Length: 190
Image (cartoon, rainbow, N blue to C red; front, side, top):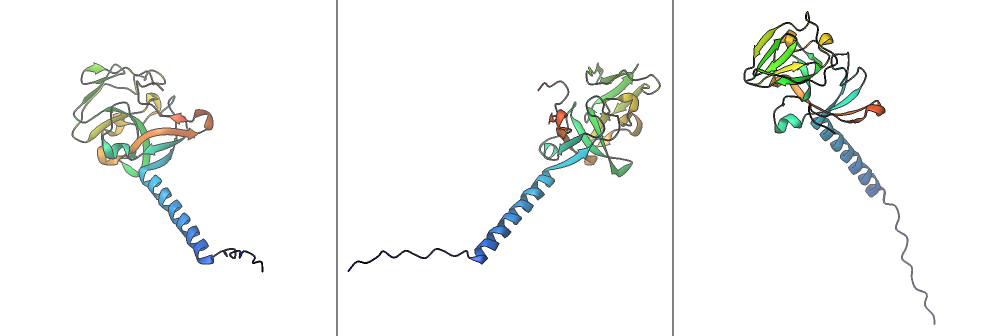
């Protein structure tokens, strides 16, 4: 008498396990999305104040983590809440850090008595727009300037920016695709 081997029945799709896997994946996606949004924000450049570094309509990723681990440094490009209206966000370059003395003399910027080399500027600032000035930065104060000084509302107009208003450091440009890449601090090369 020959016996045929018994074949175990094919497992059936267990509906509770299938839905559990779907729910697990949805929760994972939501968690990853939440972490990314806690660590970074997206920002769209408006206006000409940061030309030629950034142009209107470019999309940027701003790292909140950068300044949880350290303080803004001279040359960083930051996004911050405008001190006069925290509903508005500005993008500018850090020129002075806490304790620095920032001066405008004959359309040139001096930090702690040393003239700042600024290869990122669009053009020489006009005499009427870059009047002589002196700012002694206190604790937690940063001096912010646009790269296109002739078309920038910055610390020359509204004064130093307190640390509490700084959102983060611009780290990546992702739109338009032709300009995609990491954003470098002044003086760094890619």
